[in-house]
Image 1 (cartoon, helix red, strand yellow):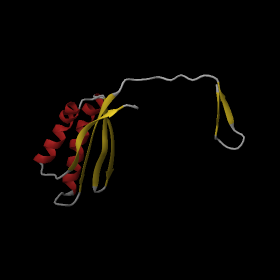
Image 2 (cartoon, helix red, strand yellow):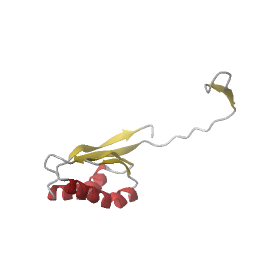
Image 3 (cartoon, rainbow, N blue to C red):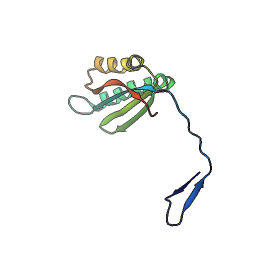
Image 4 (cartoon, rainbow, N blue to C red):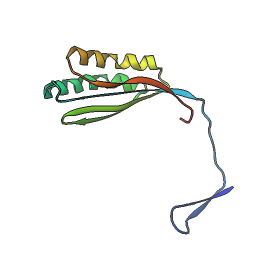
Length: 122
């Protein structure tokens, strides 16, 4: 039993019971990518690159990968892709077509090395 307070003066609660769950540690794989209009990239090439990325979303989401991205008039950025429990090699395979197609079209991009980190508190 314990007391909890903090929502304002005179606000408190009495905790009668709590359930705590423990989960095994696992790794989280991550990656980031961005490209922008300029530096030799036309507006049409930028939108072509966005289309390339969007076509890979079903395979990413279907593999339990979380994607947060920002799309602006002159820039596309996803930071980061988070893949809990997905091996790093699998994430690289899922993203491989995106990087290959960007390279084939001559669209310069910046990526951060995909990595796998332990997630002891996930």
